[in-house]
Image: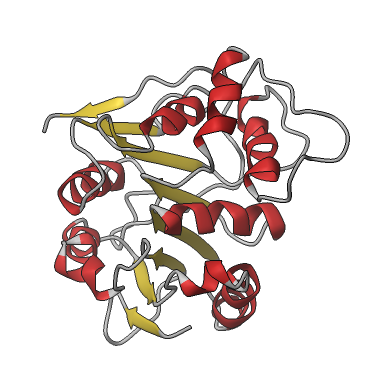
Length: 248
């Protein structure tokens, strides 16, 4: 995977690294074009940015998790970064989630913008059961090996009062007209208040840019002036989320 580092300061390395994962058929430089990096700089955050050229081919050949872990995250830890966050759009958000599922504890926070969360029939099954809190994953061998069969039970931990394992904070942003919004709502109901952000739009850059700027104002990222704390690995108490709506 090719990467492009955008440091917060040209003459020093920050302790926090934001790893950006693009959506399918999107280029990593589009994060810069659409103002994602400038939004970080405008807030004077002590966070470097790493753009990852993780195109959809890594998902098709099922090498994404290992490549991200061994080629990107482990080397960045070795360089001295104390806090790693994954920020993914669409399939990049899916990638951030399935990586944490497969490699628990590898990152300190996840921002999923309009993430692909699996097939609609499985989402419909969860909705019919009364939502992610009420749904019971089928026991026994799954009817197929699609990764969403494992992803949804893992996401269900965010709805538990006391998760079995320590989870990185997860922030979700999506447009109410997004083609994946039905699945996004299922996840939103399981997240703590203040970690769900919505806008009126659909599945495109204007909405993602809006969401990112709003989320940056609440993400527990360190400021170069020291006004914000370093992200915590401690999950907030689980309770129904109150989405933060953004005017279109």
